[in-house]
Image (cartoon, rainbow, N blue to C red; front, side, top):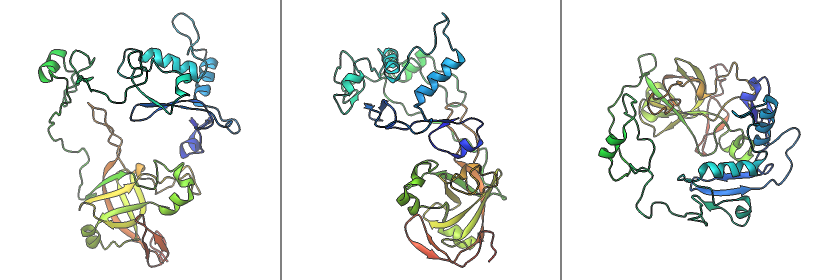
Length: 335
């Protein structure tokens, strides 16, 4: 695998290719508002680390990849030549980059695509002419049936959407494949929080962010907390058909019958970075599934149960910033 940090995934890999991060390589990136920026290398990457592209090109050379005519693949040799190839591929497309170059990007703080001969300075606003990429005569695919997944034909699409504007389709409700049950009566959901990003490989190394949310927690409604004798700061064990996790209780305004776990917390900063015997990662509890038509992942939900596993006299800083002092018990419930 390839990564810039010694992540949990890297601990399980046979070969790790150390990658450079931004500031250690030159290349472009595009923001969600279509602004294309050029990021210049400021320092050399440490040790054996190399830019992603250099790793890819070296791998392709060692594997002797070639096209149908026997020419080496890929045909570019550095970031700028790869950008030129992308410009050619984007020509005539909605996200046209054909009017951009490294030289132009070095003179600006960014240019919004499409940037073409017609729009040499980029395009600040789209659709000012009332034309949309979804117009029947312009788009190249027409969606699929929400139930069967069958592709929609051009005539069907044109009949439903003659103006080419966004459509809202109603879909019948489908029961979840893993609904709450007597054994697992809660609906568990996972997600992000304000202090951390993904699996904390960066944010956990920022002392202020890590101090603000140093450990995982489970949010429970006040109704469920009272019924199960759960209190703010208690240790709780959350179980699903796939595994178990332990986390501090946070009593909040979440809906009754629902539990929330942040998915940021893994094992890279624990005694066992592989997490072989861990009980911390929310992703070990949730399902691995996806919608058969849209392919939208269903990785953030599961039927779950929760029970009190202990409390602590230690002063615990909860995610909201307040503290609570609890009885001094180990996570397993023993003094």
